[in-house]
Length: 401
Image (cartoon, rainbow, N blue to C red; front, side):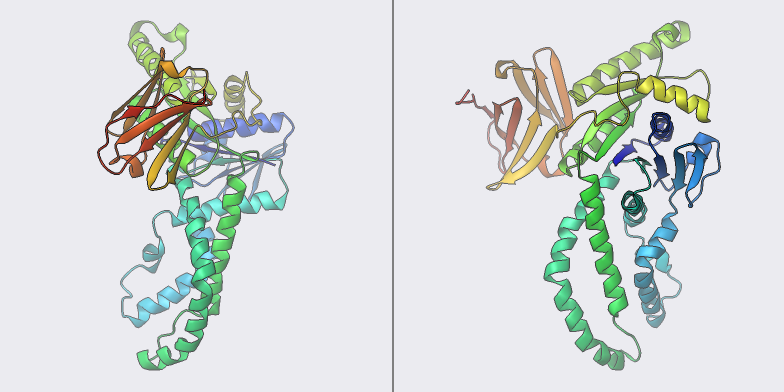
């Protein structure tokens, strides 16, 4: 089983690249499902085939599915919604929308992502391509099971027993209002367990990869770098960056010459920001990318030097952890010597200069207010320590080589 999740800022062509990958895998003999968890579905437009919330056959060895977030919410959260609706009626707050109150930030996206687990468990497909919501932060929500699991194991059993005792009394005291029953509590528990299973599936780097689609533009690159940092911190394996809509060299004359120069500058920045990940390029097409023939061309261009189904890169490029009150940022910086390294920080951006090469990343929020106290270079890894108080930056030479 192979799962490839595509994400990227809205408008970069993420859906087209995901669809092209699905066509490519189907051509290579994989039974492939492409599913969209984006609330603004556009798979149907990309394939020029009507695709809905039921699995649709697009062509030989290729199926499509546009996840209906409302249906998924009802499936996993229906009992909770019903109880909450009764609470609103009892409190005479019928004018408030129960659906909106229960739509906590990210919840609908989480319910949509559950479809990945269901399809993976079905065993019907060799590969699942996911056209994800337009931000890598959606996947950060899948870190919630670590917190929810603690609640489920430590608090949930006691809470359920307490509710059994209090529920009859509460109904009398409140004049008819009932506390959550076993069905509601079981629904919450089942949701957390399924969320844990989903996290396990997409955290397996040998099964699941995330690929970020970008355009060679300033704001798009900044968003991609931020998403890449979050994905690393959350433990997901990003195995490639795909630059879409690159103006071909042959088109870079006249009106397009200035745009080509701008793109070349940003392509260099992309390599600096994401090295050593594979960087795949797709040229700007001469016509709209729509339909199987165009998607097939896109797939051939993107993966001309790669096997689309392979894990194109394995291993985390950066990791943040806490040790003895300090935050440690660990970066993989291959093919350099420690004498070549220079480190600088400006606002949210950290720049590592390694000889003629640069690596730029966006610092996570947890590190923004913490100054760098020291940095070490060991076994091709740059290990940076952040302190709580203002400590002058110190570079340590690695004692054991």
